[in-house]
Amino acid sequence: MSTHNVWTHKGTFLLAAVGSAVGLGNLWRFPYLTGENGGGAFILIYALTIFAVGIPILIAEIMLGRNSRRSPIMGMRFLTSTHKTSRGWETIGWLGAASAFIILSFYSVIAGWALHYTGLMLTGSLDGADAETIGASFDALLASPPLLTLYHTLFIGASALIVGLGIHRGIENGLRVLMPALFVILMVVLVYSAAIGDLSAAATFLFTFNVADLSLEGWLQAMGQSFFTLSLGMGAIMAYGAYMSSDASLTRTAFAIAVVDTAVAMIAGLAIFALVFGAGLDPGEGPGLMFVTLPLAFAEMPAGPLLGGVFFILVLGAAISSSISLIEPVAAFLVERFDLERPQAVSAMVIASWALGLLTVFSFNLMAEDTLFHTLFGRSAFGLLELLTNIFMPLGGMLIALFAGWALTHGEVMKEMRTNESWFRLWRFLVRFIAPAAVAFVFLRTIPQVEGYLLPSIGAVVIVGAFAAGRTFLAERQES
Ligand code: PHE
Image 1 (cartoon, rainbow, N blue to C red):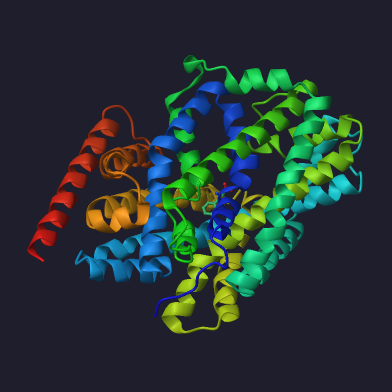
Image 2 (image 1 turned 90 degrees about the vertical axis):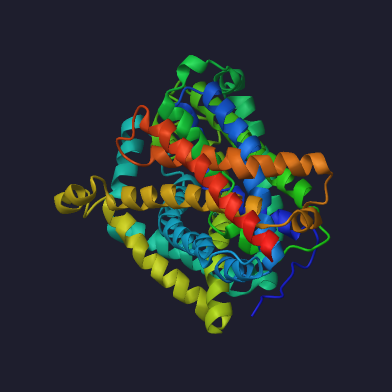
């Protein structure tokens, strides 16, 4: 059964995809990674990857969704049968479902921290506090399983409610209020931090390109981040694409998503670093940048608690518009495949993911010293879940690029992209060769101890594999 559902307006897909793309990745992960990796050079690689690899895969993923008009798993089952390719390509759907499920489990825990900080800010609890107090308050939050579980439950429950109401009543209506509000809040935060912080130091930090600042590790992190931030390779975009109006321009929409997503990350980076430098703090704090460094800046500035409260509401809103896009592909699959009612499908997905989230909760306290787990996997449970998604997402993206690049016919792609022949050729070259090779590179970062020439040689294998895959497709198509 296909979903046969289409967004109410031509522009809703853009709204939904931007909602998915803009999230903790932009407001939390991007600034701290940039801070850790020396600023400008990191951003240069990040931006290059967004445009050379991210956009082509984004186009490919929307294309697979809109062409099949089904949830990712059922959609790939449909496309493999209509294109007479191996059922193995269904892996795209299954990998996506697995990543969505896992990402949601820890995304919700971290978004829960933002819930806690919204409360701390608005009640003025941290007003005037010093670095030690603020650091201790973050540690105390992480040490408390009940508190973390409570916030995790509240956040995932709210996301489930929105998706449970359906794509029109829940997702569309929710996003129509949320997204403009987020934009306004982001502007307020930027203007205030420009007025009070050190905007020029922030701009210098972000836009001075000093390639020597960038390690190989930072290079690879920049590429990984560009996948995460565009919600690529895990079916969220494919699921939303399945509801996209056939009239909306795919190419233009994909560019718009990437541009808005990048702009939000830059604006958030400018605002956050203006406050951080204005307060004379360290930009390289890591994951604690948002939860320790920033609250410290808020604690010391006039009307800090108010701005801080507004800022964390922005973080929450951006996170929830992303988390609903993690629920949708799996819920839609359960509805299509098992004929479940939507509320049941959403509950099944969310309850299971909530339970998995407890592992992340306990990684910061009960299991922080768990030597058995650490010995087995060499990292915390949260670290392991993150590692898995760091493998699944790029892998999914690579398979999507290969399938769209090699299996879809010229006619099908042109029907979706409606561009001229040279844009088509550029896109196809990028998804056939460049994207898979680049992804292989990112992917290898996550395999421990991959060093030296192993990296280029596996890259070469992937390129050869892409050729081989392509030949098989072409051969099959000519026969049929
Ligand atoms: N793009 C989201 C962010 O930047 C995260 C996300 C990844 C959401 C994958 C959906 C799917 O926060």
